[in-house]
Image (cartoon, rainbow, N blue to C red; front, side, top):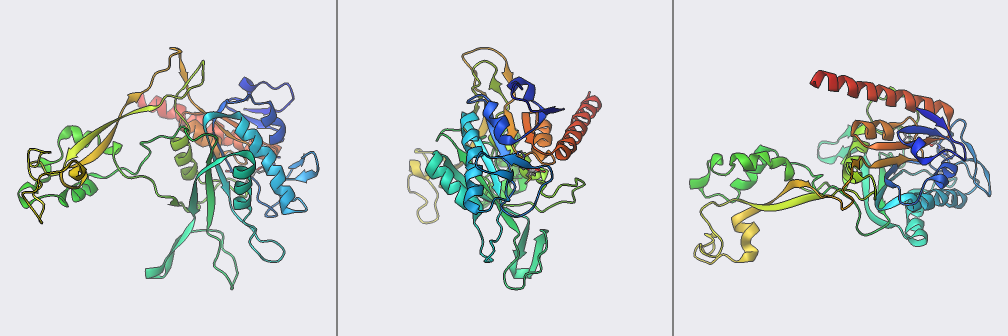
Length: 385
Ligand SMILES: C[S@@+](CC[C@H](N)C(=O)[O-])C[C@H]1O[C@@H](n2cnc3c(N)ncnc32)[C@H](O)[C@@H]1O
């Protein structure tokens, strides 16, 4: 599972492996346009020291995050992001988790934002979204909090209970699962439909025909940019472990399940669009709207969503590739693998992975977790079979 990086380590050897080495050295050997998705979290500036993490950055030797200045730290991260942009496929995506810290004047560094700004301005990245990963939130109305974050004794500012996950791409068109949405439950859907009902059609069975019900998961609303995922109890002795739920979402939405073995093009979902009637007796053009204000007004095309139907997007299969050969799962890479969460989740979701980590101890920790995941998957298959 672990391979110690050497200059002649081949790309294929790294797939589904933990590569022990300095991320910059390893990234430089990965071919152009070969990685579908990068999920990572670097050491933050001045926050914590990692063991066995002394590396050579060309202009400075030491642990990433312990540079004498914030600018030098950002310069080093930019060397990493430059390589990430090079190795991502044109439709690839980067999920970059970066929290914050204070400088010696007790001023927030905004290190993640500073980095991303430079990535956009100097390297041409496209910043598509900034997810707020909230570990603990304040329910103001009830004056209590939900979730948990690392407590802090500060008496003159609120605690840090969220971090950012920046979503960056190298092209405007990138692979993203359009059906990765919050599904409507049957209950929610009926409630929605009832907003449009006349009493005489209020029987829900009039509206939810069996075939429509089957398609319910394909509907739903887009995911908000604030995610509440509290820190679970981790059995892993590493400082900064990702919660698997966070990574599950990122990989599911951003890493294709199938890429062409020959040209690397990802298969896209074919989305079919249909309309769920919400007022069965009202028909476009021929019938009237029945709107309260004017029941005899003709229905206009633009009124469809309002008066007649709800749009449903359904999964209609996957695109093919002209190469007409096999498909393989997309590849997720984490250049700061730590305890291995990105690789464990990639394995769980049936994607290929490459995990890079400088510390031998963390490589071993990650390898152990990945092996456990592989065994669990085998057990699940046996019990299914
Ligand atoms: C914030 S932690 C990542 C934690 C990870 N997301 C998890 O779920 O466990 C950053 C990791 O980067 C590693 N690291 C530091 N410098 C590195 C380098 N130059 N190359 C590769 N890994 C490095 C550290 O040893 C540490 O494990």
